[in-house]
Length: 88
Image 1 (cartoon, rainbow, N blue to C red):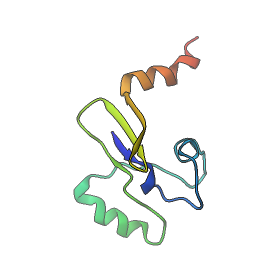
Image 2 (image 1 turned 45 degrees about the vertical axis):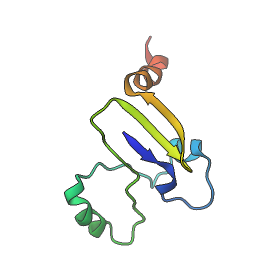
Image 3 (image 1 turned 90 degrees about the vertical axis):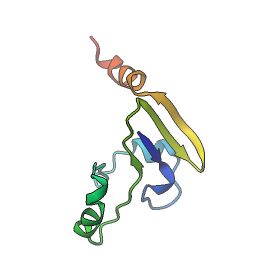
Image 4 (image 1 turned 180 degrees about the horizontal axis):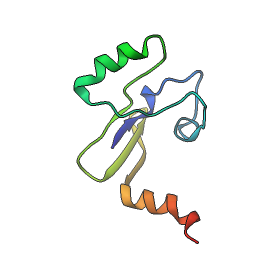
């Protein structure tokens, strides 16, 4: 996964943490096949939407802000860290 935080639609200047983890009730991540992106944008109409990243074939998650990596980590390591608090 490669993602550019600079592409995330937001009101005002938000920190990378706010852009990544804000639980705004109106923010969704949608996976759209590249050949269907124009149709998706048309369907969204006036709703703010942007392509913020791509799914890659590798297992590395790279999230960039202002040209610098904010996160660059293997997906399995991120998954383990996310699940660890729930492993009773």
